[in-house]
Image 1 (cartoon, rainbow, N blue to C red):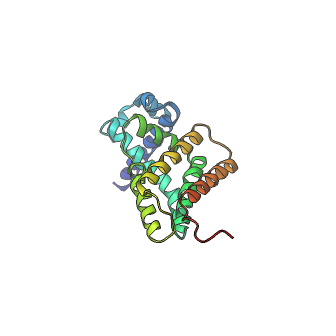
Image 2 (cartoon, helix red, strand yellow):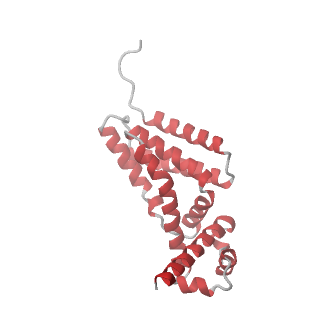
Image 3 (cartoon, rainbow, N blue to C red):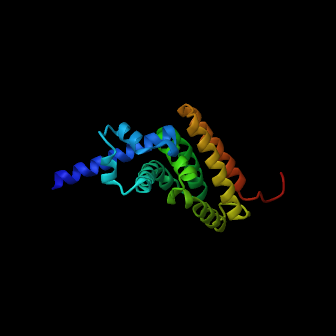
Length: 200
């Protein structure tokens, strides 16, 4: 029983990985079961139907797997940063550098959210995450005076644009690091507390 369960779990994971790769390469609209089965090395699409209730079920599993992968890459770096400013920087830099390590997963997630209407808690929750981070940072004196909601909207949109552009044509690692650092610098400057005191 254990061996069969392990085999079935492994087959399900194999199908999910194949679906992610096909979506990243061809897009959600062209990600047919036959194409996914071929990429996974399956003899027929029946194995996909055996493991998943339908395409929506498979796509949901893809999103869950991608979130697991991206979280494992980003979260340790964010957790290691101390203070609101450092955490903001770590989030931005890690998100950009994620493209270099997991471009396939990033491209697939972008397509699923944009074109398949898939829900990703990691994506949809960022606006509230940024807004709360800015509010608590302002209360701690780490950030200046600005509307946290507007800043969160602007920053998530800007970060999305940079990540999507990089994922479409992945730069060299050093260039990705530079882009992430530049974007983080921009965000840090934009949120910094106002200068106080008389000019010297």
